[in-house]
Length: 101
Image 1 (cartoon, helix red, strand yellow):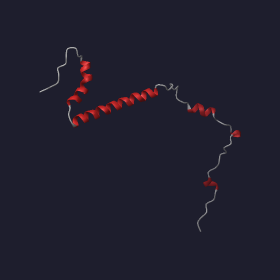
Image 2 (cartoon, helix red, strand yellow):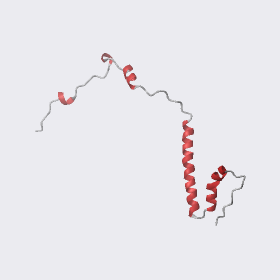
Image 3 (cartoon, rainbow, N blue to C red):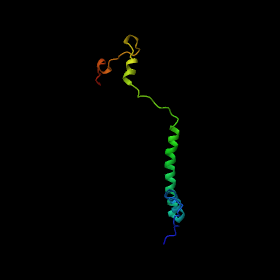
Image 4 (cartoon, one colour):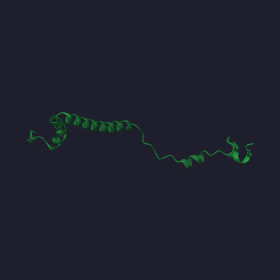
């Protein structure tokens, strides 16, 4: 036997859907009510988290095209006569090996 009140003629389908979670909690007893409240709380936290993140990102400016690495390297090329970094040959070829005695 259902003790659920029949929806009135004035109550729309949208209101019925929106009030369904509250009616479910009202009708539940004991651990079922605690479980429903926990599930509803997690849903609210998840939706709130997404909305909060979106609100935080709303003030960021729109970034232009991606960075062109090849063009930057072409501009940043330093001539060898002005370069402070000297090419060093690998040490393994220029240093003779010593055998343990």
